Length: 347
Figure (spheres, rainbow, N blue to C red):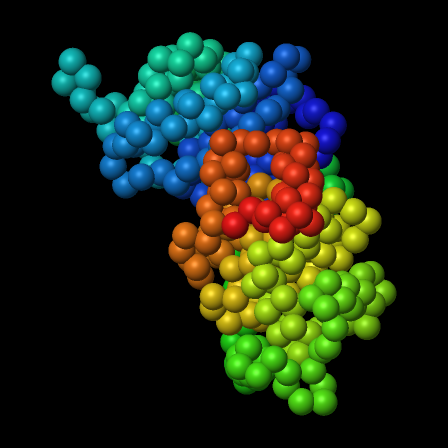
């Protein structure tokens, strides 16, 4: 989504969340940066905690927003929690919107950074409420229906290649490790290649770059289909070479970017731990460059779960947390590829 998106109505902003995040958030707090003319910038999300929001979490959200230098931000709480009961000074119990305390903590952290808050909104059961609105439309038990149909933001995200999932678990499932006899056979092929370098007459031969190029051709639109186990084995072992991996990262910048993302996805699903860390990291790069930050986060989580401390994944996770835009990432990748060509990879 390279073109700036502009939305002003709170209901439209809530409806745009799946396109902005890549999935419909559940029990989440989302903070959206707004630029001039209502342009949507950085969108940050965190899980709603069971108790008060840790001060460090609120401060981190504010820090990330401050890096965008927004005109204002909108805070959205997505929760199916029921109305709370408050005891005002008069002693009569009255209903109130849920999570008001959490909203207060985030607003305080944003105010400390001198970031204007345009609105704070609750999204629940297909309706939305403003925490600041005193009118009947935003009273507990009322609310305004969310817009029907698919948000233009979600349409734009899907046109750019993003797959909008029903929740974050569905994103993780997309690259979940394969299971069953076929998965076991692939893992055996991978480990046999690591032990002996070849696995018989079907083994893939040639330089690491040739191995990756052959697998890439299979993953292009109209290609021959599923990668044989021997090609998965050859690719994941090729990626254990730091310079090979870093040069492979450059595929995300060229005409074969879509085929490369397919290749990294397939290898992430089928490679045994910890050899899935490299393709998962490359998958994160591909997703990030096309604006799918949710998939990038999930892939980096996979890489760091498989191989904690994996340096390239750590560096990319820090950059993603710092909200480095795709255009800047392209520059960084070009530098890493250049270093790999000189034998000075990213580590």
